[in-house]
Length: 459
Image 1: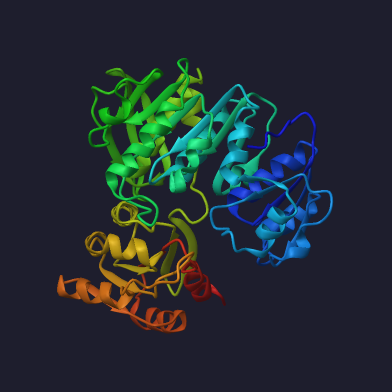
Image 2: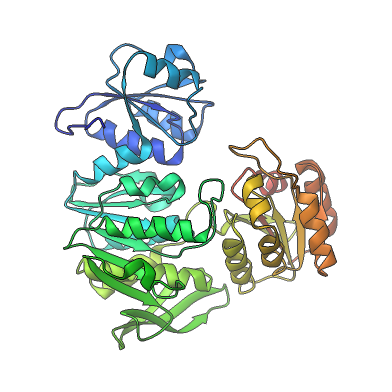
C-alpha cells in the first residue's frame, strides 16, 4: 500500500470529493499544503467550499479528470472498478488508496487518535466529544460525518496531537485505522449487503477492538448484549459505560424538561460526579453523552469543561433537527434509517411538545428494507401516523421484491394509521390536508426525504 509522507506534500486526487468524509479529508490535506483535485457528480456547498480553499473540482466522473501530476488517487467504497475515472487511474499506473486507508494514515500523524464506532450514534457522539474538546481548549483536529455548527462544517484542523474521527464498520473500513482510544457505542444488525449476519458484524467490531495498542483504551457500552465477547482477552484497557451503576461510568436519575431535553446524574465507579444537562432530547443521547464523558475523563478534561461543552451541543444537521413551522405544524428532520434509530427518535419525539406525531419515512436501500422488514414495521409503530415514501435505492438497483407499499400494508394490519404515497408532491399535499396546528411532522431517512419538509416550509 502507498504510504503518504505528510512532511512532503504531493498531489492527491479524490474520486467522489463531495462526500461528507472525502471532503473533510481533502480539507485537511489542503491545510497541510497538499495539491488537491477531485471529482463529483454535481456541485454542492461542500465542493464549492473546497474550490474556495484551493482544490480543483471536476463535475462528472470522466477519464479526462485524471490529469498529469497526480501522485495518488483516493476513492470510496461507492466507486466500482468499471468507473471511468477509476479505470483511467489504474491504466496510468497511479497509486490508489481507499478513503479508509487515507484516514488511517492521517491518524498516525497524531499522538492521540480517537475513533468513535458503533452501528448508530457515531456522528452525534463525535460531535458531543468535539464540543467538550473545544470547551476544554484542547485545539483538536476533528472529522465528523455531518455538519457541525461549532466547527463550521464537517472538519476542523487544529494544532494539538488530538485527532477525533468517526469509524464506520461498513466494508470493514475501520480496520484500516490506528486509534489510541476507540469507542464502541452499540452493535446492531445492519449493512447486510456486506455482512453475513450479526455474528459477522460482532466479529468485525472485535477485530476493530484488537487494533488498540497495549497502552490504548477501549470505551464500550456495557449495555451491548454479550459485550464481553468483544472485550475478553484484549491487550488494551477496557472502560465500560451505560445504565448500570456497576459500570465504570453510568447515567442515573434521567429526567426530561418541557422540550424533551435530558439531564442525568453522572456517576464514576459508583460515585456521583455532577448533574449533566443536555440541550438535545432522547435517552439514546444520554448514552451518547456518557460515552463522550468517559473519553473526556481519560483525557483528564474536567467535569466542568465537559459539562459546559455538552450544554452547548444542540445537535448536528439531520439529527432531530428543528426545521421550522408551517401553519402551526412543527417540522423536524431526522437521519434515522435503521429500526433501532427510528425507535429511539420516535420515543424522543414523545418528550417534545406536540399534539400528534406524523412520521414521513423513506426507507434506505432494498437490502436493509428486506432484511429488517418486520423490525421496521415494529419501530414505526411508535408514532401516531406514518407516511411511506418510495425506497431510496442509494447504491442498489435490484428491488429484491420489496417496496414501501408493503411496509404500509403491514403497518395497517398491525393497527397503525399508515399510508403509502408515490411521490413527494403527493405527500406534501396530503400533509397540508391532514396535519393540524400543534402537530409534529418528522421527515425521516438517509435519502432525500428532507426535501419534503423544506418544500412545505417555503413561503
